[in-house]
Length: 469
Ligand SMILES: O=P(O)(O)OC[C@H]1O[C@H](OP(=O)(O)OP(=O)(O)O)[C@H](O)[C@@H]1O
Ligand SMILES: NC(=O)CC[C@H](N)C(=O)O
Ligand code: SF4
Ligand SMILES: [Mg+2]
Figure (cartoon, rainbow, N blue to C red):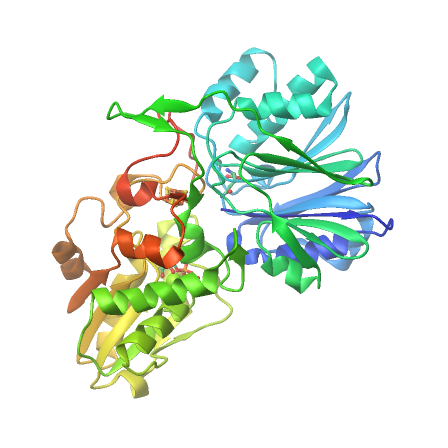
């Protein structure tokens, strides 16, 4: 996923500290690396490293980032390992000026583009797909000199997910791919124009939400305010592996609503919190059970469990405690880290669970690491029955757009029916929300559902995407 955040100060104030706070509010989107690049209209100063925002930056570093406009990034790696050279923003120096780029999403054709660029003499400093965008842009800029033209030409070549911030000298371009896979929104206060992956970061800075960047938009932010352009994409449709014609249409990632985004964010006019509550209610209708209490698997299971409890009238309890110093486990890059983190993160409360029939509610099962361990823990704490309810249908296919579920083999549900999964996880019953139930709960149809259905909204027949994790 990754989080991106940018500010243009119209009053000529330093922006680094504000970007820091913006990134801090987007930390849930990426925990592996962080970076900030600022511009004083001529020079770009930047700093990036592996680690959480608070680990990467201190006052001294921030004070040295002198600039009136800037962009930042928190990284969750999907193409290229977690090393510092893959952290963002990428800064590329060219005769046209300095360019900084922050990318959320994943490209399917990055390997092909990289080979093409290398043949033409480009030298890469990282193994990510995001640097491919930066190098392509430099190439186009050297050819045309017209920035908008160069950006449009670059974007025309990209297939996949990209919410992008590009800073060139004295302006920032905020871009959302034609499918609108990842969120991106604009904010404003008296002195600044903001752009952020989620509006929760705007609230932190006391800025007002203006609007979402629409799929296919290029928003130029400069001292003159905002100018909007459209991405030109000639490919109106493609033929998928089943031989069907698939027309290009908006396909926002359903997983943003289910897991990724913060519940206090609103994406394309739909509150993430409300979606999660709706899913919980829907789950209670689709998969009722006689039980004594409903407990969430924290954190993201919380709102789903509230909805389930409200609708089923089974009391809501906190059966599991979360160690607040442990971050998200699913987005850790290795399985060993994920296994250990679940135990460190969650522990059962015996006084709540002992002798009870418990409904555990979580947002999703991906690899099954969390649910397997939790069901075992809850039983050990004395629960009489453990019923698991999941707010996302079975995840059966890889994501190529920026969520690290790259192979079918890793997905517990890819080749098993529900009964087999239930046995493997050790629950007394298991219920997933239906696809129709999920769409109804989100309240929009223009969604990417590819990891649930195997039907991808873009071409997928490219050279294998590089993975270094
Ligand atoms: O089946 P798995 O591979 O274990 O992945 C699914 C789990 O991972 C996520 O939690 P995570 O700990 O990442 O974040 P959270 O604190 O926001 O729930 C998600 O909420 C599920 O609990
Ligand atoms: N999850 C993301 O958005 C990652 C961005 C980019 N593909 C990277 O791996 O750095
Ligand atoms: S495949 Fe799944 S996780 Fe990936 S963008 Fe589509 S809905 Fe989101
Ligand atoms: Mg979780």
